[in-house]
Length: 461
Image (cartoon, rainbow, N blue to C red; front, side, top):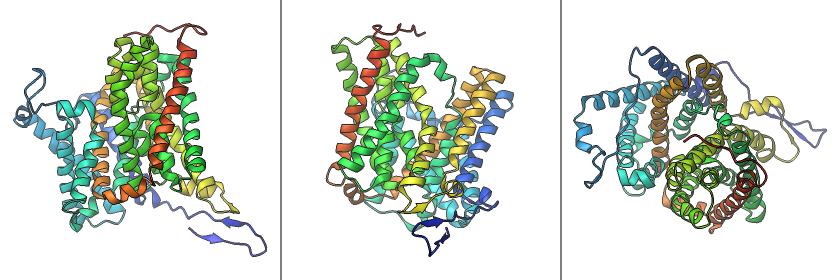
């Protein structure tokens, strides 16, 4: 970026970095949008025409020890030719698109391709581990991706030839654009003002509270980490941390730490929150809504909600779905806040051009995908087709995120994570923020769904 200062004035006027038409095919954010768009378009054509199968590989649940009869054995999956066909398709689609993207960003193909092959192999190992029945029930793929990467980086080390494929932000942004298609605005209507009140009023208040508590009370200097952890706590854990971290330009270690803390406490809340709600005689719809608004991971929300019954599970999933819609808006607001307030120096004027230059363009792709799904594809082809398309896209999103989180682990060491804790202040930030989140959400849930003030809605289960 270029800076110009008028010597006769005390303020500094920043001239925005130049934007070129070539940015559309050379810059990481725009390339993520195009990759996401290509995957979404092909998935839509495949599902709506039925001409071909575009499904990516998904490991079926398996068990190390014999247990449930309906859980497939690992050997039976590997013996299935269709499994290997989809794995090859997944490798080719992701490999070709990310290789082209890396080339357009200036990476040498002969260095990137072998590195990507190895990274994809590691991603397969992660998906395999996270599909094991017991491990899958309590810990999501993000945890295992981090662990695999961290074990390598903190033991044998990451070889130089593998480093060209470690493009964390590129994989994250591409996955988020694909994820945008699943964020349907029609979910708002399913729970109406109740869901909006629980998910959309509480969430921004918690983020603002954690921001001021982290920066003013705890005096944490790492502001991108504070914002990333606040979003992970108040919205939906991993996905919100990814989007907000990118918007705030958080470091890989910031994202790794925020996700690690979120996962640990998600497990605890998933287990103990239903027990406490049962003991305190909360109604299923109230208990499910509280779970949906406070448990970070969507998968953990389903498990915790199920413990309270079908009505609670339905309420929990609806609240979390409505809350997930906020991801794009939160990331957009964070990008503007950091560009105009946090990252500028005293006396600096930040104009519209500078905001556009700094703005993470992948958020545009996220919103466009969401709008297309909500207001074009769903009205034209129906909710069932949108669900089928999302079934295909969900796996490509997951593969992109697994590549990203494995990259984070490979690019991180435990010493850096320890430094990020800043004497335990980061842990205090999460604990205090989550307690505030639970108390505020419980208050709003009681006001809306106790039946004392408003009529309690009837949910279809």
